[in-house]
Length: 204
Image 1: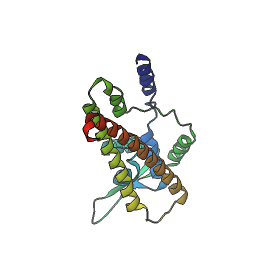
Image 2 (image 1 turned 180 degrees about the horizontal axis):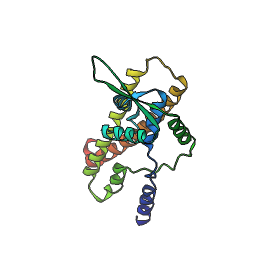
Image 3 (image 1 turned 120 degrees about the vertical axis):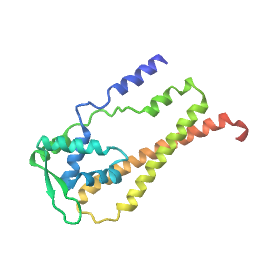
Image 4 (image 1 turned 30 degrees about the horizontal axis):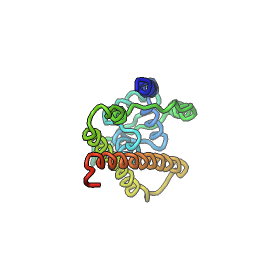
């Protein structure tokens, strides 16, 4: 058990290098596609990116401020008569170079921190009832993510495509994430069924 625990914790300690601010590059990628306001970026996160990378308003606007300060994006005030003025951001040549460099870098090893799996790892030290609650909560989370992906497909899948090559890889990411979610859901459903059978053998 001790040896297994050492292996588990060592894998999670090698998670993403803090110096690699992936949100920074995601936002550069969004602004490469087209100029956007902070609100536009937040909307794009909600409909297309939240299933694999989430970011709150404060993170988005702080990152925009830092990108602007670093000279990687420009900001332009768009005057509007019937609405509040909009601040629209666009990539600078330096920002394009930064994004291009990131896209060509090797991807670091994908060790991540996952509190659900960490907690599940120790559920053998508690009751099956506690483990079942965590598994049921995880199932609900997976179903919500899959539902969100389906909503985004219905809502935006039929819109005109301006960048088909970009869309090709965005759809590939969505297919990959959907497959991962479905695989996780399958494992979770089986684990729930095993625990429910053990807790209520008379119902089987």
